[in-house]
Image (spheres, rainbow, N blue to C red):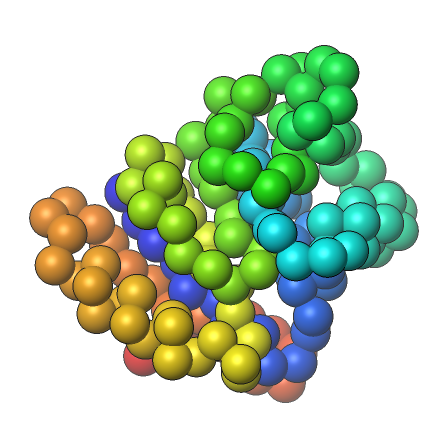
Length: 145
């Protein structure tokens, strides 16, 4: 299992999720994106349509019909009706259900740095779990300490 910590310092989450989703699909995997923050899922939905016009990413909402057919699901709970093995927490809030997934993306802004640090430390004690940290520098994502 792997947990990727993505510190959002330049782009908002709705611009980053499509990049993660595209890479996930290129790897032949499915993704569940979770958020309980107001209109965040709607912004991500719009961005998935508009941000990568040359590479449409089929997606849907977890609470809509045929969710199981979607390679990318947007929802408020950690239930992947589509059988996703990857999960992304767009709201920056860690949920222990992530430990059931092969790969987790925790995206967080400056307001959630303390929470992310606590998660990083706690997850360091989980056997077999690999942690990676990503930050944006000059528009490019780089792995860092």
